Image 1 (tube, rainbow, N blue to C red):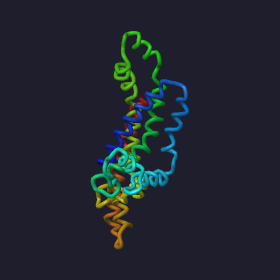
Image 2 (image 1 turned 90 degrees about the horizontal axis):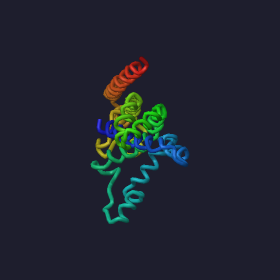
Image 3 (image 1 turned 90 degrees about the vertical axis):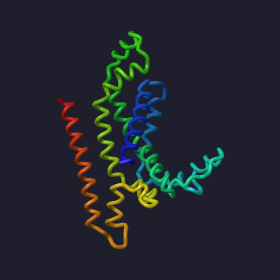
Image 4 (image 1 turned 180 degrees about the vertical axis):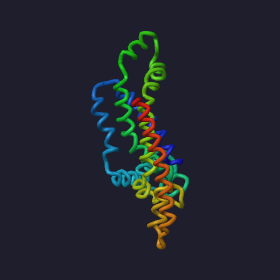
Length: 220
């Protein structure tokens, strides 16, 4: 739950901020927007391996940066206190482009006349966002968040490559737990592993049905 919901919140907030930023149509906006899609286009094994190297306790670039500012190195992937945060950061980085693309498309459908009328009435940038942008983005936001929940629930490759759900169970999720029970031990427990997998399927099914319901409401 922590991994899923913290990832969704930061992916949505950062994705929305970037979508609003790129909606200004400044010079090189399309080029920069394309660069932000790189994390989404890379294979998960490449992204996970890169983040594993960056968070490496001995030779990682993150600890090297901390050393330069006089901070003690952190066991990002080897400490129970930091492992979950590390995989959340990597997952947020991967999910931001998806939120950016969907929310940016939603912003394109908001009539520019509404912003012009609000500006003539003296509304500032924050007021235009709160009164126009965010309310009109609610349908798109609902779809974005629900799809993000379904995608994040089944994240396995990233966590398994970076921490294998450890140390201990500090970064374990339903997906990694199911795999560990069924295939990660010398004496596989296929029954419990399948049971955990079924729980994951039921949770994803609930969010999937909720997504269909929201989509039908928007169509009507």
